[in-house]
Amino acid sequence: MIHVHQFPCLSDNYGFLVHDTDSHETIAIDTPDGKEYLLQAELKGWRITQIWNTHWHPDHAGGNAAIQAETGCTILGPHEVEGRFPIDRVVAHGDVATIGAVRAKVIDVSGHTNGHIAYYFAEAGIAFVGDSVFALGCGRMFEGEPKQFWSSLSRIKALPPETLLYCAHEYTASNAKFALHADPENAALQDYAAEIAAKRDRQEPTVPTTLRRELATNPFLRADDPAMMAKWGGSAPHETFAALRAAKDSF
Image (tube, rainbow, N blue to C red; front, side, top):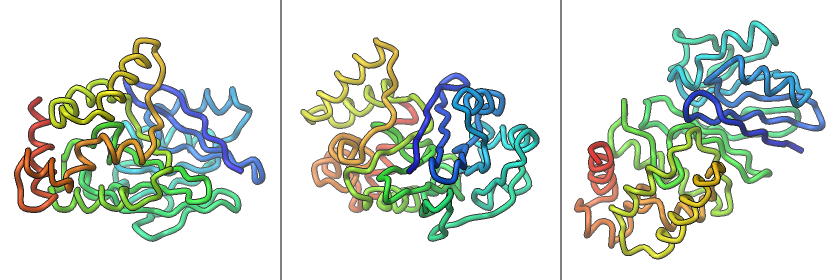
């Protein structure tokens, strides 16, 4: 059985440690702050045995060296991490990563960066999605292009609706403001936004979120909805997605 320990680090990142109670292995999902990850593992009585990177950005792989030096852990991630930060095994779409006897499927979610991946634990019903999708948002398109990014989001949309999405940042309050601008008549979104505001007032995390809720409220996952396409233009979902992403970038 796996357990997820979530904690804030840096200014708005979340750190995740995944611990398998059978093998006693512990994964660091991304490494925004090596010292904080090592501290959190020590507080839990866990030893980090692996690092799984989702993409190359320093706030996701910058702690690789420090953690590996302290623990001797194995690091795996997408090809784009090579040459930037330490990595031992390159994984890509369709590969399988394991912690003990527990398997996670590697999913291509490129668009934020061109090699971005996610890790999906089917039996546990959880996915670590990095910066590909957020609660009520998605990552800025630094390297990819709209059709590619929409294909990535479609792969996330195809997961079981009850899947818990562990996003890497606490951006939800800001995302909610744009979502309400993009889709103001969405009653489910209005309720969700009110819940988010209350949580943040209490300094509570809004992560993880459920895919089911995001499918109903996240404008970027709804770019194939006829109402969104009519409002935001485009003859294909990726064109509507592009319009939404451009609007969010300047919002």
